[in-house]
Length: 614
Image (cartoon, rainbow, N blue to C red; front, side):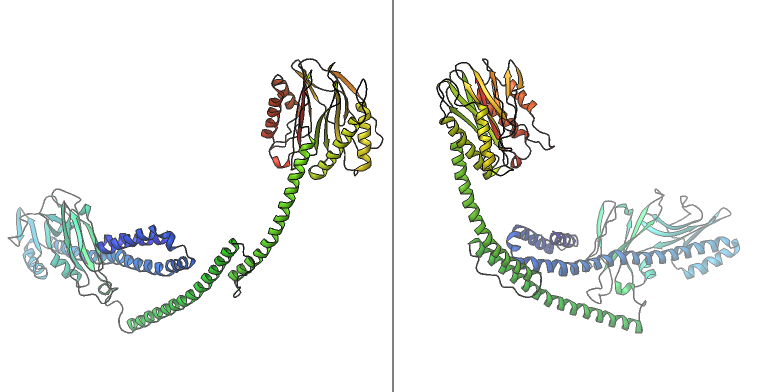
């Protein structure tokens, strides 16, 4: 971007100086560089070369342009100020002559006029005294003093597109024609006044180092004036131009702006200022400083080439190393040369490839473990009911969504006979594989107790006795920190009676007549203490009753502020959707929990079983 900006400034500068061919070439280079910037700047070497150009060449060019602009903007006003000073001096002389003539007695004025005209051959006067008017020279442009020139006036006036130095006292009007020849006589060869612009409110000055002149546009007329200066002493001796604005009243304008266009060169402007031994010393210092700068530039160039080679070689070797790594080749290290950041980078790359080899081994182990977990998940899914028992008076549905690969939650439907069906839901402490293994052991123990103790007229076993057996088995075969909450029930398909035992589990929710409430009954979690006894509860389900048994993954789901989903929100969902199909109710509940939970990675297992009396 800096290069584009610098070239744009250079192109505009050359274009304004009239060098249209150079401007077009610069713009063409700009467009070509912009079109192929990706191809040109893809290599680091090209980028470094461009950086050296920006840091080395561009500043030199910009400093050179700055020097040229400084000479033009600084020396132009300096030359214009010299023109202003000599013009002020001549105006003062004309004013002094008018005052001298006005101060003499009338008898002596003729003598004094002759002496003044001898000193200023082109000076003219108009003397008004005692009702008479003396005009000298008789054939001058003024027959009388202009009425619009006030007494005590000293300055420039414009009459018929001609410029005059004028001064007026009470009885004397002195005037001096101001031409280019007269101005150049006053300024000497150091300053060349090449043009006078009348009414120069829209004065436009344009010049260049080859002295093509200044364009003056004023009063709708455009003309070009050229300097008449001696040849330059060197490339640095450029032409500078300046405009000297001046207020020159005319008969129709009290503030009539005119401008004098002046040219000069640095050598002419400063000639005579520095000479002799001082000039020689300045030249010696200039040559010495220039030589030092050239030597420094050459040393910088050699250093830059070596630095570029070091950087580009290291980058190329790193690029080649990455290409080998992309092909799976990790055994070829990158050469480490020198002691610098790039060599450290090469060493880090070699260390990275070594770590990549180790990580690939770890990744293969992880893939194998994930494959085994996928098999474990598939096995666990087979432990859940594959089909839902079809009962005459009860609809059943359930789902378990693991928080990780496998779940520590468990639900089951076991058809004991044509009349009785067991409905169970458990939640093992912890997550992951250990909880899933413990869940599998609970499932096998429950099925063993239910399948191998057939009864004639009632349930296989009371739910309280069943939970006592399961709790003691868990206590004896698991670590102390492992336990499970459990809800075990059996349903009578003929009477609609539900017999259940709650071992520290969340109370199931019963929706009846548009109201929701928790089932009574509670107990100690299974497997935490030895020889625990449980109570057995019973409830009569009525038609359209909806019973929801769920794990703590539903009410304890937290949002971003740490607020739990809660049982009240679950009850509201169940009441609102109690008449919908059970699968749709499960979908609504699980989707509501998903939308509520802030971080799915930290969620617990989500399990829910629905039963509705029909």
